[in-house]
Image (cartoon, rainbow, N blue to C red; front, side):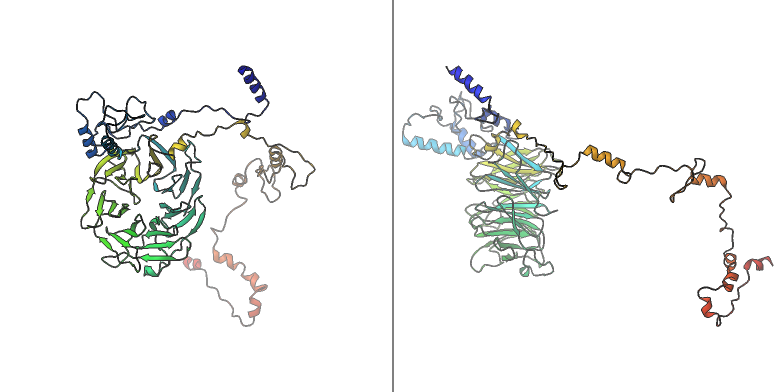
Length: 610
């Protein structure tokens, strides 16, 4: 009976279009999809786990001390997290303290409440440094290094800006496995994009380029306005209406959606109100040892927006607390922080720690309560881009930054992770063998890491994720296959013949007839003139006996003879003297009575003959 119903259904379906009704599509399992995006080697050198561990060294020693040395059960493999949930028998828990119970499925009743609390604490400590590195996708489209990155707070849209002067917008919800951007912008022609920042409500974003004017766009990429440019001939920066040189950085206020902060090469920081593009709220002039204009290379808000940090071109860091009656005098002034320009600043959430990244290849950790010396200095982190930043993990137990590719070095662009508590290197993750890593960000809701890379000829945004711990974001678009084109997508336009319509609505003649008509017209076809045989006509000189005019004259020879080279110019003029005296026409009649008689000198040739 079921077979007869199936035959009836197929027969009825044959009478409808192909796109009618529910379509049965073959679905690829998620495990196969994530295997396609799996990183071949999450760590550059997985064998040397002591140098490049996926956990901090202190956590790893603590876990190893809990495990007995002669245990037939293999230790858990931390370097390569699994893509799909593992089968129940091998327990993939990072906590190796309790080998008798299984961590997957309903656990057996604990012996007492204290043991269960200890197990949970150990599991939390063992997994707090788990970095989502198992899978990777790349958002391409730029032709040069990607220097700016911004992910909205909800994690649905990604902005990337590049040295190719463009900004690309990606939407995870509307993007398929092709990973194409839905909009491309060029804020200022010929100016590199240096920073992008979302508003707290994610309805607008700020675009900072190499020009002196920052732009505001809405969520869909439509321009809302640009801030005014100042007068470059006014020396005092506090009297100018805006920046007068190229911008270096800009950030939206973390709490207030109407306030933004920008820094510029003119040596000032400015606070703006996005509702008024013609005026600024505050001008901050950094404290300098000598009068002049020193560029401000980067700026940053703290988490609550009550504090502003600016990196000055002389290597110093200055911090201002926003309070009633505050001015340009900094509350914290750290001199000679770095030997070269500072490219990135980052506050911790509690406001006690400040991270700084510089061109001198170092990352320094500062305690704002004791700023005489840094807490820790990490060296050997090459940096060749002014937009290289630092970022914290969502729980702020880790902080990380990118490295640039050097000419004679064999290592490519890396992401270096550091432990905030112990201030030590945790892991180095290879991102690209030939491209430098510039901007990086760890989204708290998605639990995915974004890293921008590129060089002089290409650029992209790498997204690292783990299907077992990450949510939405890359997982959504990777699992969505591109829509296949069906026969209904191709629609043939009907041809309607109306020969008696008005000339405005009349069908255009066929191209073949138009070409034939043009070829017959010598003017439209630009047909070259044929050579003339015989005597000339119509202003054209003909030929004789089938030869050219020049050849004809050379053959005849003496018909045209140039005698001006052998003739004396004086005699050539005097031969008209008698005719001019007898029949004066122009000037001579007016002066006939008063004009003296001309006396011509004798020829020099006669004197020479004598």
